[in-house]
Length: 233
Image (cartoon, rainbow, N blue to C red; front, side, top):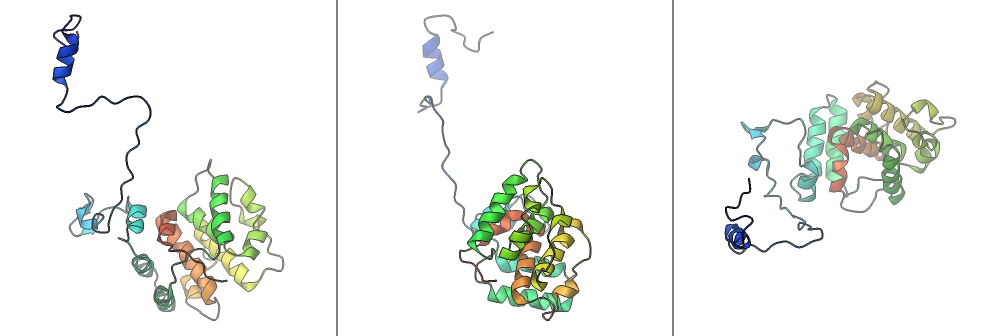
């Protein structure tokens, strides 16, 4: 049965016109694109979210974290505070706070780091990497030495740490390698106590590992925080 009472009659077109909303203009062919929405930090306040209950978020991870970072509703300091809450070592907590105070707006060590990390993510597109594996990939591409030593690993469909060339590796490179293994595999090759020792892990290496830890906790959305520029290593 037709929805029009006057269907199949000369008055069907007039009846259809009368049923349309006032001012309605029929859309023509082609593809319609919605305008890109822009949000302010106030628009993305956690208190306005449906998952905010009893003065806290009920989710393990914010569903609009990337948008909130781009709008400035989440800061680098806030993410580091979350990391500090998971760290029991006083020395490591102190170093993380110092890192927050000295942050220059960069998450990647160089343009080559950013490009190599992005390109290698596409290699693993068929096998969706976990955030911990992405954090390991961030470490394996962070310095020229690590990119050279992990080249063969990054051409495979899975990350196999036994394929990383450790012959003659520097102390900094070995630390990054152990950090990647610890984050991806859940072992204890590198601990928070190790990170809290500035004589064992220098400042530049410590910063790379902390940024990898942020990726393991919050995903690659944290890269939306980067304000441009890179720090030397």
